[in-house]
Image 1 (cartoon, rainbow, N blue to C red):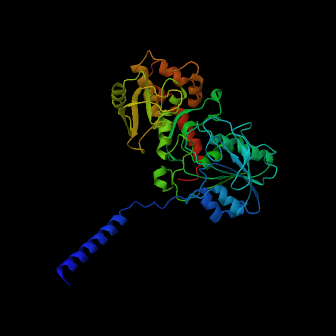
Image 2 (cartoon, rainbow, N blue to C red):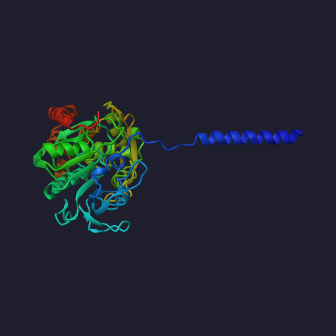
Image 3 (tube, rainbow, N blue to C red):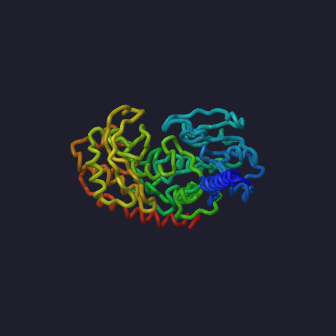
Length: 413
């Protein structure tokens, strides 16, 4: 073999080795360490649905750990006779707050009934051929999210129809230890807050169903199919599961944290929170805000797990399209220590301090803000220039009482 041949073979060997190394460094999908309830139902709990005509309340988030649709799984492994869609619809393609009509699912031929249109719970007519009602929707751990009330109302409908209600449990993306914010005052009961629970309640959908069923007297024939592998310290990134957007403006699991930190503020037209821009819930801005000034003020408060960066932007759609704005982007640097509601209160008090002449609470929409917070005390305390610490302290006793009561309904440690 001549030197040229040896050189060529050597180059080929090095190239092949580099290719192996390169392939080994390619990212691979993490094997999920958590099995959601749909997985457990099919592998261990088929007796719950065998021989029954099933109604399924779901949306695109209803998938197993391999991203296979719960609709398809139940159609294959059971007798699926009805589908029920929450806000945003069974296929997730409806904008927030828009009503939805009934139709027939093209893939399965099963009738789809809207629970966000003329009715917000299954009617006796919808349930006349249903032997068991199944719920499989990913939640975000936030009291203002309407899916948990679709669940509660459907539990009541199942009770009236004398059929079992089965919750296929899923992780709370915020984990099972983050409980924050005022407990809803029944005077502010609404479609985004039906029951007196904290803004962030630290329960899975299955645990919350157990809480609702007993504490609020629904008393349906409830079964929760628990997950495997989940514990209360986990946020979404620990589960190994893929995130399916739960609604059009919750595209990533991290957005659930941002939504909790700015969602109440977003109920007012006076402050933009990035809905209409590329960072839904991840920023706070307006025409009258000075970006550097607000960032300096908020960073000086040394809030846990978060830093604020000055930001200049223009919304691309909705009512403030093309309006130049300044504000801050909210960078969560430690999801374990970040406190979304504490952050939201500090943002409100900072805006009030720096821009006292601006109409922070629009008279026409302040009722929506109060419904989101479940009380009018937050708005009043901010306008009275109370400190963030004073505001946060005002509901701690009720939050601690909820924590104690809710532990009775834990399915996971």
